[in-house]
Amino acid sequence: MLMMRKLIVLATAPAYQRRGLGSMLLKHVLQMADKEGRVAYIEATDAGYPLYLRLGWKQIDIVELDLSKFGGKRTSSNRVMLREAQRTL
Image (tube, rainbow, N blue to C red; front, top):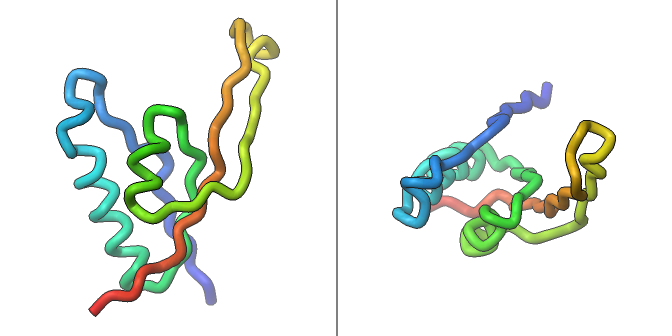
């Protein structure tokens, strides 16, 4: 039976961004995925996209959401990304 694990949101408060905290948290989660041989999926914001690229994620699609349907004034885009399990020694 395939068991799915979910991390719903991973974010770093703006005052603490660009200090390696997001990378540290994400690496911990990815180590668990690698150990179990799991593919990881994420919908990346513009802010997180460079980090995910550095950690081996590949963009496979883009999701656009018209925020005006929810009272917003713009369209939001997230990059759909996958990361294959990395071989652990």
